[in-house]
Length: 91
Image (cartoon, one colour):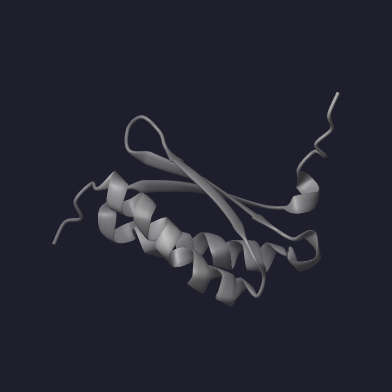
């Protein structure tokens, strides 16, 4: 059986997978995702710095890949800690 390209369902699956991915990671996560031209979804996951590890980032990435696999879309995932984000300053 060949997967159909269903980007809206894949985006929905990412959001629906978030609670179980947080449980596997053992920490709260912030997820942002958007559809790119050509049917690729890019996702950025931010976790608290105190919980960041390479193994945990790979677990998160794999879980999100598993969530969208049935929809036949490509998923690019970046997992960072909240310390990797530049601080917000008002000018």
